[in-house]
Length: 145
Image (cartoon, rainbow, N blue to C red; front, side, top):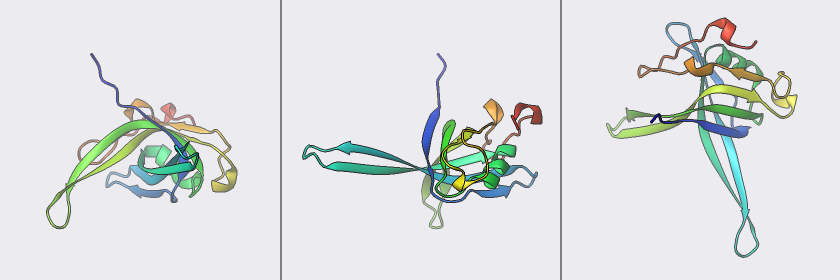
């Protein structure tokens, strides 16, 4: 039986995307997205909890995110959850979990960027990174822009 690793997030950017390039010239964007759950507690009080999700986007889609997304902009993200292990400065093992975005759809107003509302950018199943941290770039004709 096959397994499934799929994350779907709708939330707001916590900061502007940071776009960098690998040594091979591939674009990578990182940003955080906040999702907020609200509920009513037993005392009829409104409760709220915000979760922060680390997002990484690769290729042309990363460049587009860097160009059109900004802090506060609402986005729809589809991707897979990945956890990386690393050693901190004291030599302790640490883990970092992120969503490797395969589709980013810009939602909400244009205040956060110039793309029209609901515009979607999809790297498809080939987007992502290998253990060395470098991603694969889909052919240009696979990206709808």
